[in-house]
Amino acid sequence: MPYQFTFDLSKVPRFFFTEVARVSYQKGMHKALLNTMQEIIKNCRIQEATGLNLSDAVVLLQDFIDLQAVNLMERKKFLKAKKRVLLLPHCSRKYMDNRCQASFDASLPSYTCAHCSKDCLVNKADRLAKKKGYDVYVVPGGSCILKILKENPYEGVIGVACGEEVKMGVAALDSMNVAVQVIPLIKNGCANTAFNMETLVKTL
Ligand code: SF4
Ligand code: SF4
Image (cartoon, rainbow, N blue to C red; front, side, top):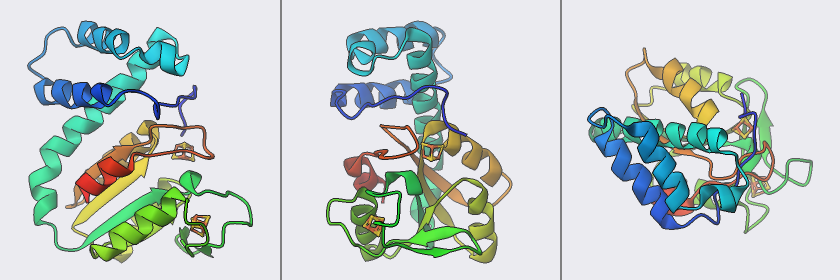
């Protein structure tokens, strides 16, 4: 399910993301998280850069912090995982119409990128991950994840999606013995969305 608001953090300074990592690390020890979040939003000029109102910006930041905390908790286990998969969101394809040459497997359902556009984020991520030995699926929604994992014995999963979708995916995987790493989108909207390639490279 998408957020009820749109955002674009692609022009937000890197400082924002280092602050998210810092606060995630302290999560649980921090007594005044809301105040800290409001400070980060102010210092990183999130409202000016995105046009979000304060409560939406707080929701977004809270999700970033929660998901970063998941990454920190799961990292050791993920690094030990031998068979890994990268799940990319279909909304980050350069084209959402028939200009996208990806093949579609209706049984999962998922797309396989055909590398038709050099500047497509999915193309870049797919090539990078496959070089490192990952299987890659471009999925149209979170519901396919369980099916993919039931049919394949993956030990490690990297999921890229908007925060709301990722949270549902993490909850769904809770009962399965897989190590999870998540990369929330920095631009949502269900088409022409974006994730940070640098973050993906580090996570892979
Ligand atoms: S590069 Fe891949 S995902 Fe991107 S538009 Fe082409 S086939 Fe679709
Ligand atoms: S932004 Fe992308 S990942 Fe999030 S709900 Fe829309 S299509 Fe799914």
